[in-house]
Image (cartoon, rainbow, N blue to C red):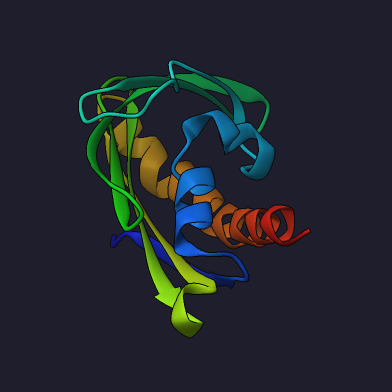
Length: 144
């Protein structure tokens, strides 16, 4: 299966979109499955972020490592533990002379142990439905 990729245009500058979307502390505000985040202080390559997500009725903890951080253009988080490890890439492109932005998120998963079964049967279908809704919520939060 290939990565899930969604783009959305936001009526804010690339710097504003990057600052908000790449700050893991904001995940619970715009991502339906994100329950809590710890360790999302000052972002730097190598930073570890603990994210707790709810899928269905269960909550799953995971640790993500920030492996790329290039403001205001791109960032990359990679899961380093748990049966389901996410891989998230975000890019922000300037539009309309920098007054608007296109945010593109690419999400993939790596399954370990039971996660090899969960990724194609549960996790990816759930994420495929949730991702466009999350981007719409992010757009709404940033534009109002």
